[in-house]
Amino acid sequence: MKKKLLLSIVALATIFLAGCSKKDDLSANLVGLGGDTWAKGPIDEWISTNYTTPYNIEVKYKWDRSELGEIYKNVVPVKEELVVPIMDIIKKTWIDPYVAVKGANFMKTYTQKQFYLAGSPSYNSNGTITLGTAEAGRKIVLLDLNTFNPANKPAVKQILHTMHHEFGHILNQNIAVTPDYQRITPSDYTATWFNIFRGAYSSTAALDKILYENDFWGKGFVTPYSRSNKDDDFVETLSTLLEGGAANFDNIINNLFIYDGLYIKRNGKGVYEQNTDARSKLLRKKAIVISYMKDSWGIDLTDLQNRTQAAIEAQSPTADFNNLLGPGKTYGTISINPQKLTGLSAKFLTTYNTANTTLQAGNPQTNKGYYIDNISLIFTAANKVTLRVNFMDPTAALGVGFNGDFDYNINNVNGTITMTYASLQPTTVTYGNARIIETYIPTLLAYFNNQQFNIRWVDDIIPQSKSILGGLVKTTDPTSYLFGTL
Image 1 (cartoon, one colour):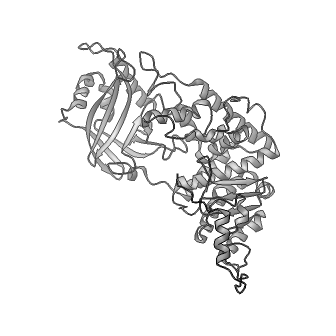
Image 2: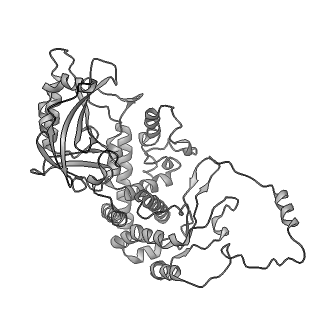
Image 3: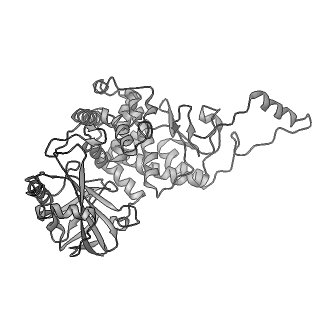
């Protein structure tokens, strides 16, 4: 955290008095520091056309310290060249989807009537930062805008999350959500929610991540902030469903398990122990949000979610998966674990499960009864992909496993790859492990050998899953595919 330099009131007054005399003219206009007037220009005309006229919303971007409330905090003005791009994104990804499902009069009636834009975040004494505030449903302050890039999808989603959060408060203040919502996790709200952050739990990064996520997802909350109180819990769930999309929420649910330290608890055949309590709580909250939006406002949340996600993608398009996958690129590995995914093709699952069952039947040489925990496709070079089979020994301590690597040569032509099992496999440890299990998983190895796949996003299979899931679809059989987390 950056140190703050504080000037005492006495010292500040001394400096001020030393620099003034009776002859000084203190009436000069300090342009840009509030209270000044300016000739209306293209920015103001755009705001009038897109916000003030249709929705009676004022957007203030000229510097006015009084709009920020806590005047002791250091916050800088927004860059004027960012005003239109920011407000255009907000209109297209927040206002327009609501208008499409509920009409312009709905938004004119219930939206905040004033926006104030600031360039930097507001730093709080508890170590958190404030990205947005709302006042009685009439005004919203958006901060940390000077780094905004409309092509940066996480940045777009961050602003959109704030918008849906604050608008959710307005809806809830007009028609309260059922008290049943707060009864789902009544004992886990905490005023010190800000202590839930990465790095607070363990010096081991992997364990820290597990414990961090367990402190909110594992208790039935979508974000750390949702643990602050019942109202923020409700609007955080609403905003996460809209901004994050269906696949994002489902991915949270699908990855809730019971851990023993670094490892998921499982039975002797590798079946994971699910955190059914957390899954149930999150799904119950989602169900109440869906019912609330429908019963109280006549809004189909799925329809609104689909339109919101489509608008985000239209404003910040995701690059083709093939262009992002490979050595030195955004993604280098596709991790496939059927216990953490839903929607894998039946043909791939049959292949995977057959290999797993055969392996579990036991290796006559070792009689270990190994089972497959998960597999990965690792794109190590332009012309090679490694199928890594992670397998476990059920007789050993939890977490004791092995990596078996199988190399395939690939020819990639515009995202269509042909995989051929490499006749000469290396002889290092992981490839030695592969030799131990090779004869027991022929169906899995054959699924890839001499097969052609399209490397692509699978959002037509798992809607709204771009940047979460990426996959391979057989070119000769679109019903045979696999995908995994990135």
